[in-house]
Image (cartoon, rainbow, N blue to C red; front, side):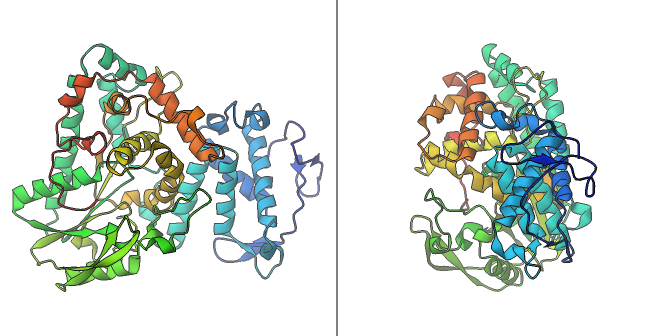
Amino acid sequence: MAQGTGAWYGHERLDDSTETENMRLRTDNRILLVSDKYGNRVPLQIEKICRAILKAAAKVGGFALDIREEINSPLLGGRTDEDIAEFLAHDVLGRLNSNPQYLTPNTPAPLDEIHRCVIETLRFWGLRTVADEYQFYSSARLWVRRRALDERHFSHVPYPQELVDEASRFNAAHDCDTVDGINRWVRGGRLQELINAAIERYDEQLAIATRLMLARPGVRLLVIAGPSSSGKTTTTTKITELVKRDTGKEFVVFSADNYFYGVELHPADQYGDRDYERARAYEITLMRSHLLDLLEGRTIQMPVFDFKAGTRVGTKPVSARPDQIIILDCLHGLYPYITQGIPDHLKFNLYICNANRVLWGDGSSSRSIPFTLVNMIRRILRDSRHRDKGLLATVNHWHYVRDGELTDMNPFVRTAHAYVNGGLAFDLPVLKRCLSGRFPSIDSLPHGTSLDAYLWTLDGSRLLSSVEEAPVESLAMIPGDCHIREFIGGLDLEIAHQH
C-alpha cells in the first residue's frame, strides 16, 4: 500500500514497521477471525480488503470518475487511488466491528458479509461506478464458488463484449458514437436515415438469433432475459413470429410475473418502496417444478398474480404439447436455479441488453454513457405512460434494479446462446422529445432523497441537457413494431404474453 498524503478525517496515521513497511491508519479493530472463501477461519487482513477495492477501481479507470465536487470531493479529492482505497478499507473494518457477533472467534464474519460491507461503503461515499464493478465481480465469483456458474462462463465484464464492440463499429461508421455526433444528425435533419439504419441492424441481430435457435431442433424452452427496459417484450413477440413463420411451431406462454411472492413478503424500506428486482422475489422452486411438469406433458395450475393487490388471486390451468415451445420472458431467465434440472439441449437462452456505446460530448474524455442510465430514462417513460408511476418513484427505485442486475443477472450473461442489442443509435434525441422537459431536476428532489437517486438524477439531467431534442415529426418515422415504442408509446404489435 502506497504511503498516504496526510491525516484522514476520523483516523490517525502511525508507523508500525512490525506489521507493514508503509504508513497505515489506526482503527479500533476487535475482530480476530473471518471466514474465507473456503469456509476456513483465518486472521482478518485489512490489506486484502484494500487490494480488492483498488482492483475494482483500477478496472473502471480509478476513483476519479466518481469524485464530484458537490458530493465527495472535499474528502476524497486530490488523493491517490491507493490512499482512498486504504481509507475505504478502514471504513469497512469499522462497519464490521459494529456487529457484535463478529467479535468472537465462534462467529467470524463470512466473506459474503465482508463483500456486502465493501459495496455499502463504496455507495455511501458516492463511488457508484467502483461499487458496480466490485459488486458484479464479487457476485460472479460467489456463483462460481457455489457451482451455479461454470468457470468457462465467467465473464470479466457485465455485458456481452462482442455486442458492445459491434455497436461501437456501427456507431463510428455512422458518426453517432458521441453525443455531439448524434446531435449533428438531428440538426442536419437526417434523423430518418439513422432510425432506418439502427432498426435494420436490430432486425439483422434478431434474424441471426432466430437462425441459431432453429439450428437446435430439439428446443422446448425459449428463455428471453435481460436488464429492465431493454426491449424484451417486443423482442419476444418478434422472435416467436419468425420461428412460427419458418417452422409453424406454436408457443405456450410461461408468465414469470405470476410467481412473485406476495407484497406481505416484501417489506417496505424507509421510503415505502419494495424490492421486486432480485431473483429471490420469485418463488423459484415452484417455477422450476412447473416448468419441468410442462416439459413432461403435465398440466399445471399456474398462479395468477394481481399487481394492484400485490398478491396471488387464484390459479389457471396451463399445458404444453410436445410440439410446442414454452416461452419464458423473465428478467432473471438466466438465473440457473430457475431452469435447474432441464437438459441444456432443450433450452435456448436469448439475452437482450442495451449495448449501444456512446461517448459523452465530443468523445475527448473517452467516457461512455452508462447503458443503465439510458435504460432508466426508458423506464421513466414507460412507468409514467403505462403504469401510472411518478418519474421520481422510478429514479428512487433504480438502486434495486441495479442490485438485481449486478448480482443475479450480469454474472450469467455468458450462458446465453445468442445476444441482441436493444440499444438504438437514435435513443437519446427521441427519449428527450418524449420526456419534454419532464425529467426530474435536482431542485425537485424531496428532502431526504437517497444519494443514489440524487446521483442518477444528476447524471440523467446532465445527459439530456447535452442532447438535441428530436423534432416532433420524427416520432412518426419510427415503425410501430420498434421496441422503443414500449417506452414512448404507439406500439402496434399484439403482445401475446404478460411482461
